[in-house]
Length: 116
Length: 240
Image 1 (cartoon, helix red, strand yellow):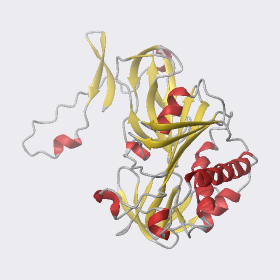
Image 2 (cartoon, chains in turn blue, cyan):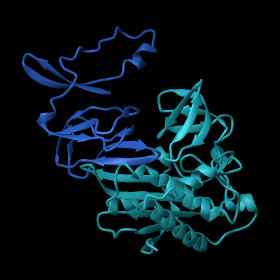
Image 3 (cartoon, chains in turn cyan, blue):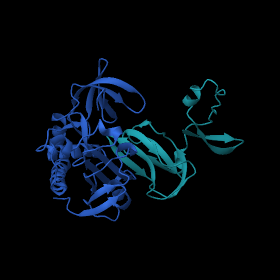
């Protein structure tokens, strides 16, 4: 799942886009209707960007865009060297964007989640 | 010895989860043991089976450098290996499974809680198959226990004390930038020279394991290339 911000008539919407690979596997599927995002990166100044504390693999995303989280709530689980790291929210707020998906490799300091 | 503050439970959903949910109010180096785990987890939320076995988790709240904490898996593996050494010739399947004749005898699950780029809690969960002699069918081919391997039963309390002493020893080594725990993992690896399938969650590739490096990473030969990996899932072909 990828999350994009899309502007329609000047209003900003957060759109979740499913992986299209699953669609490809089905011969009877409708033509791909992948929205063309206006911008694929989210302005990081809008909230608190939670970054990867180390290189690793995202093995779980525990929140959805729009969720209310408290300080200490688990946002994502990042595995490195079989160490499963719960990356928890440093602040209370609303999940404005999720910039990673399960299975994705991330580098140290890669932005993961934006809490606004 | 650090790991002296012990909490015993007859039954807990998971010793790791208990520490994760209560680390804030518990003292550093708390040890939690449970006779039975009702929802024991292995890595990636796999179910862990527990019978008459040694199940414990330890809590570490030291302000460790995040760049270093992935090595804690190797600290735990070295501690278990040293604990089992007088009993049987176990090997370490990088980075932190302990196997005996190709079957898993110990599972280790290390977890952390990280807030604002700082370590809040590090939790090492260890489950040694001790006196269990029957495993569920789906893992019977892959699992063994001390009792199955040696035909004897073992005192869990004694084993626990040995394990905590060894954990304390290798954790001390880790804190002082030592490499003895890595050497244990390098010298007792079950994987050296084996053909494996390397799975990085996306693709699976055949590879030959060349060695465990001084930094704790694994060196693989994939095709004609030598590649070093710090993280991922290693699976031996054909056998566990």
